[in-house]
Amino acid sequence: DIQMTQSPSSLSASVGDRVTITCRASQGISNYLAWYRQKPGTVPKLLIYAASTLQSGVPSRFSGGGSGTDFTLTISSLQPEDVATYYCQNYNSVPLTFGGGTKVEIK
Amino acid sequence: EVQLVESGGGLVQPGGSVRLSCVGSGFTFSSYWMHWVRQAPGKGLVWVSRINTDGSSTSYADSVKGRFTISRDNAKNTLYLQMNSLRAEDSAVYFCARGISSGYSNSPWNSWGQGTLVTVSS
Image (tube, rainbow over all chains, first blue to last red; front, side, top):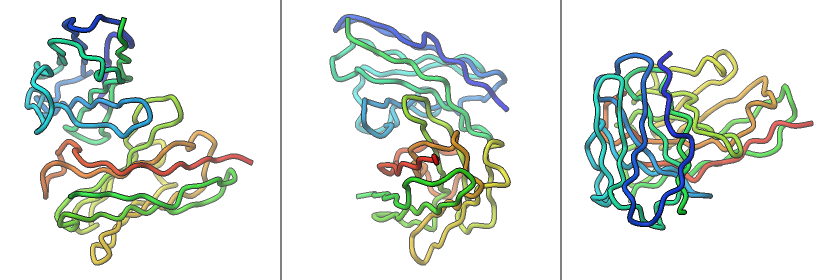
């Protein structure tokens, strides 16, 4: 099974800060990497797929990068509505696996 | 508008069974691979199972293999998860999810149901 390791597990930043979350796969997954945001009490929402493709309707302050085993999610200017937990997902092969999540808070 | 609506959750005794349903609308249900994902309270997301468009191919997480069965009825636009031999660690909100692209197994999920809570406890 492919293990997905996210870091950090939590972070606190100020409004307007640039925030970067990393995700590492235990083996290469090409670009079959998605990022989801889950606000408290809500369903996960797809932000980015194919490592760097922004899902329709997602604000442009979100961007993704990487390929193979190392990936990043960047929020260029953190907003209060970005308070959430972010998950990366390998959808290259079963079992489909998620990272442990990164909880983002406002300082 | 794409909608996925789960039902069937509740309180179940250890060793018991429950069947979850997920009804899809607003899209051609029979064209999409479908998935079940779960999330224990306060924990992360865990993929459970997937099924191809006509139900002929299924996959499971090791933790549920042999106990859970995924199926679908395309005439009713409905996805199922039969859960047997339930354990306390199966307690979670169960979501059904659909990929972005029809016909593809390797597709991230842009449509989720609201989830149904299964609690396994005596």
